[in-house]
Amino acid sequence: MLKILTVDDSVTARKVMAKAIIKVAPDYEVLQAANGMEAIQMAVSAGADLVMAIVDYNMDGMNGEKVLEELKKTHPRTHMLICSANNQHAVRERVLKIGAGFMEKPVTEEKLRNVFKQVGITVAEVDGTAAPVVPKEKIAK
Amino acid sequence: MKITEEQSDTLKELFNVGVCAAAKSIEELSGTEVELTVPHLSLISIGDLINELIQTEGSTLTAISQVYSGPFDGTALMFYSQQSSFKLVQIMMKTDTAPERMSDLETDALCEVGNIVLNACLSSIGNIFETEIETRIPTICTGSVEEIITLQGRTSKEKMVIFLKMGFTLSTHEICSYISFMLDTDKIDALLKYVDRYIEKVLG
Image (cartoon, rainbow over all chains, first blue to last red; front, top):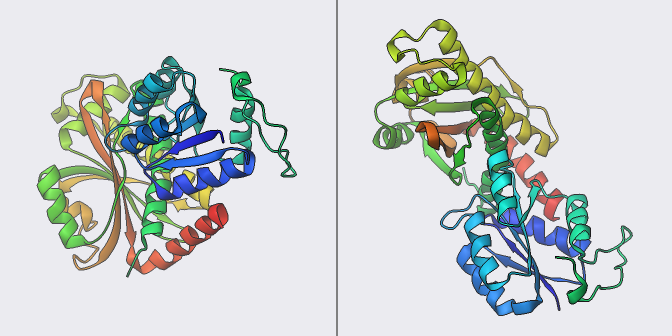
């Protein structure tokens, strides 16, 4: 099963994100990590099944930017997204520079649906019916 | 008085969203990125808080305080070391006035920065809770940590408060500051009801 990883040091934020992902993209398994080290380990275990990593920016230890840089080394084809309330221009620019997308908190299903559609992740129709799964190799980079 | 792990985590996350909104305001005002720490929350007596702040920040602070009310009441504080406050005003006003010659206009500018930042933070939290948080006119004061934290002696040192704190730094200008919220425990039940309602809404 294809996987989406969410990384956030807030349990509440992780639960909110996981719930939204399950609703919007029910065909994907959601992995949850509380920090950068956990995220890297989970990504390695998931291997090529990891289609997207959604990472908080402001975290103790490794911040979101550093986590993405590490994940890029092992998963260059995985889509990367920073999800943060910190939407300063400087932060957004750095995120874009490392080849990741940016989504502002608070998370909504609508925002997530738009992001997933942009990168080719299969989303459920609004009535909850899943659209046909797109093979992994066809997911746009 | 007890706060569950889930309530504490949610409060920190909501505070984070609010402070990030404030950071964007500062970035726009100063043209400089604001680096943020992760939020910290403690349930602490005013007396212990004073001791803690003296140890970490020194004995004198400049603070902008803003009383807010609505479904829950409290005092939002933005405080700086004296040196940082002067530097921030110099950046905002694009002036190099020496600190000892700081005019009323420049002091007013510092107060306005606090007003923008604290309101960005409070309104963002109000929006998440789908309620209105009313704010009064901010006031600026420089004094001992005790004077500032007890609101010039109006608050007893035994009083318990929830203290949320998040540090920010304007790295290129060497400015370190904190945005803090002191939440009176008298009103904490009202706040926690909103937190529980939010948790139920987003996770229930």
